[in-house]
Image (cartoon, rainbow, N blue to C red; front, side, top):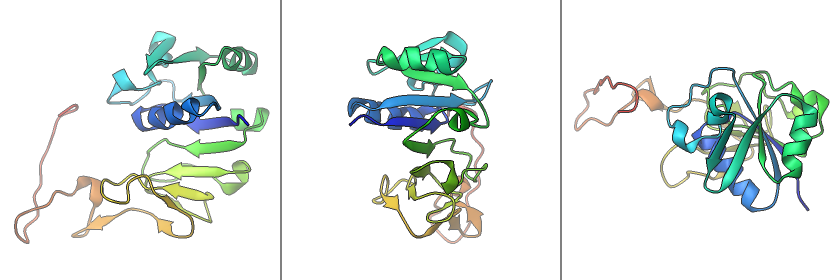
Length: 182
């Protein structure tokens, strides 16, 4: 049975989720902000915001403006991308699953009440409180694993947020500055 799935965010991780779910025959609607912050745009459906259409691994994502266009795009077995920063579409259309893949490293308002099954990617969410499950996005052996009853806030490393922390060969802290795309 095909599910209608709303994915909040259309960056590279969200696109990976969309491609995997699309391969399994589900209908995908993605929301994005008006000026996407995606770093790896060539592999992200967020490109459709600028280019009106994006093809990622044989999946076509099309920019839409309203529910009528969403239904038309889904009818063509394509991915619909809607500029909708707050995810308001979830109140106007039924979705079987809602995935928060914004990757803001904090919860920007996702709630278990948003839909029958709410899943969130990355840190900033508490499984069982903000969503039904959190998907681990931290590199390592637990990458991709669901977390159902555990806080998944920020990881800490020597008192610093994990995504800003680098391993040093001793007890010192390594601080580095990289440009975009480094």
